[in-house]
Length: 157
Image (tube, rainbow, N blue to C red; front, side):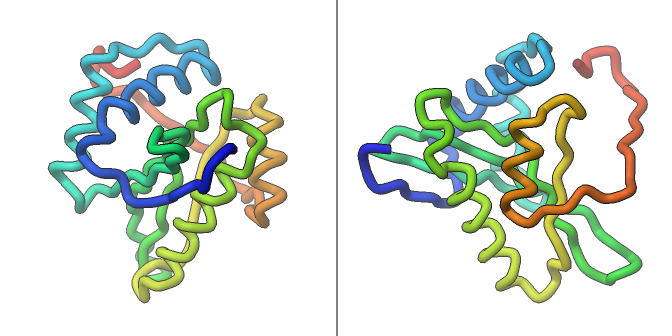
């Protein structure tokens, strides 16, 4: 990274970049081709509904080079929220330079400051060893849960 990296909450003006990153991430990690218009609507909707979560971006030289999304899960066992880290993407030319680590540190600091947040969670594709190594290095631990889903709408990729 040539310049100082700034990590900040995303602004609505970042939506187009975040949407493009999401399309790229889906293709790179799962070979899923997402509809860009749908993704743009999805990204914009989070800015309209902050109770669902928020985005974080990392910018260097005024260009956004990475992003992630935080969504909320209520834990009745803990009477507090988990923040889920999702939609992580770092531009290929900025990978292995500490971008994700800085975004993660930012999120962890923000979460620690909230009395109603009890932890951070994320999920990762089973075969994504690079991501798993990164998450382990940050102190995240694999837990004994598996994610199951059922798609309720035909337009869900």
